[in-house]
Image 1 (tube, one colour):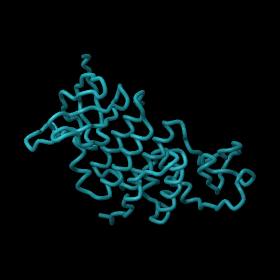
Image 2 (spheres, rainbow, N blue to C red):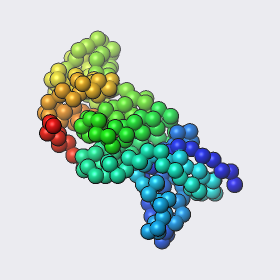
Image 3 (tube, rainbow, N blue to C red):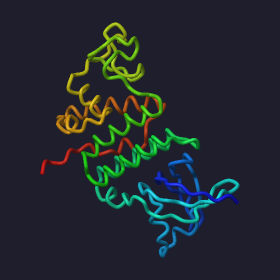
Image 4 (cartoon, rainbow, N blue to C red):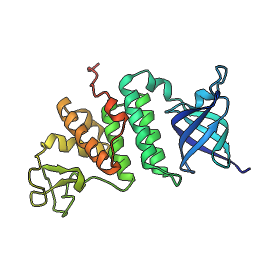
Length: 246
């Protein structure tokens, strides 16, 4: 049977039998892969620790009739322990891998892979507040998938902004002429934060107020739910607490 190698980030795992696991991975070149890792649930297995969610590994597999089989795995990014040790980071990472699972398929996307690995690495290093890292990842992953939100020009008619009304179903901000009746106005600080998260402007994002972040997170969640057609199960568990300054 054909054997192949790839880099992959572990999205989720499921028990199979008494000692095996089914591992779902997003790989660099082969898209999303579901494969069996044999014997990894035995207590003496070091192999299994390399195939836990949020880990990045160099894997060797051979093609099976229904599921591929993982033969080897070498750690490339050991992010799992650092992320699991912090509740806010863990819940944010869980929402990230669920999003990646929903947005990718067997064809895959190198951009989605690199985006996810970068976000998990950032979480493990505590480079930014977990909630901001998550919202930035969600906006960017949707953009890579072809659903880039507009926070400048009107998403419907293209009229130059700034505009202060956001309609997730229409793709972002809309002008007063395109806004459906009853559309609520959004303050400039929240719109600025959304634009900063999409562009990766971290100084501007980190300078935002707690209530501004809460409003922006609501917009991001609504936009994500609209395009995925149903919400993420893990998103309801995300901790939005902002750590006190050092």
